[in-house]
Length: 314
Length: 300
Image (cartoon, rainbow over all chains, first blue to last red):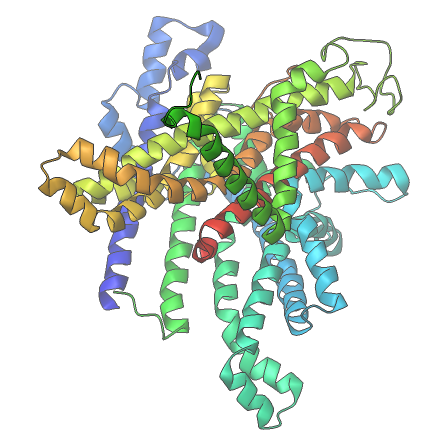
């Protein structure tokens, strides 16, 4: 088991190093001259030379890579090609919105998905089970950008209610802010809670068939106690893992949800940066997403070995 | 056939063929009975494929033809209504399926071929080559699919060929991983050793002995990824980074409808339903195939 942990710990920096090489050199290989694009009409060879020196583009590419990577370790992601602002500030300003959306999505989908999944499992093949599973079919079938578009678009056609655009900062008006983020979070939760519900249901069903559950019942424990102490404790391990692994889904979801609900978060920023060919911004975002995703996966894998002593990795 | 001679091999063929056809039908019948949900998925997949292949000829007018009919609702003349340029929405929907579906299918096929090749090479080479390959795969898999797609679109561009490469590159890493793990276990089989012992060279062993046993499980697993590829290809167009208007495509039709949805909700509903049904059908069918093939793979 120690060998496994060491192997995982060694692999992470290697993977991130390869990712950083790919992110830097693939962008470097894009045809076209940034300097020419920036100068546009005021292009003269002398000015181009000066700007190239200013941006450090006249040095060997390997030196540029080292400089870029070194900067990132110091929290410097370079400046946006679009508005020359430091990318760190741009990302930092938008992080809270995405974080809020992601956490709220996670909270909602966990509450509904796990809660309803337990009900569906305990009441297997009863009416609750059928209704809940039917609902999850829609949650799994409808892509988040479709459901979000319809949630924004359809209510005003039939009712007086509509989604409010124009982002309100949390510090300005906490309730307005939470209410605003809650709707995209619910849309995101529809999809993710369906996955959680199905998984929880299957886990509960499996745990209920175990001998120790029958023993607990035979001892005369209350139904609730059996479910709470004996079934759930064992059913929840994979569910916790999947909740942890959902980070990737949260990032992907934020790309569409922030676009459709006009929230000024990271997801919208990356789409805009791609649209404007703002290469340094895209590089920084992709690398950070990779770092975050890899570290979370590592943490989950390691805690998994702690949670479930039966697992012995070779 | 002149005289009664001994039955030639060719005479028996129809019987064998008929038996095979019957056996195939039986298997199909069993699939429908044991996997009714998968059968529903199959119906949807066929429907979607029909639209993708024949949609161009199922149109009622030129999908880009303008008319004075502004944002009309569905009627007998315009089955799915018209959009804000008076274009017949039914025709746009029918020809809008092909780009999404073709991209996803082509991406899966190329990714399958490339991923299997590199996966087998990685498993066969062992040592540092294998290690390097796996770390590269890991670094690709370190990004959520849509983020990797956004990055590749930035680097490569938005033309059809670029999008095909983007989707192919999305399929290759997970395919390498699956193909490698299957190949690793197959390389230990006695028949591989036997083939080497009989003097076969590596390309022949890998191509004639390993590959036929490797392809089915890998193919089954990759089938389940077509759904997410459809999502990414429609999603990119929805974000304005995939198939560009005025070429109709379900993702960009849905995106274009957003500004008009208050006055013409049908413009959002039809592409929304189409994308959902396509993804849903492919997922149901893929899961059913996987369950029939090997229920143990369900956890993968």
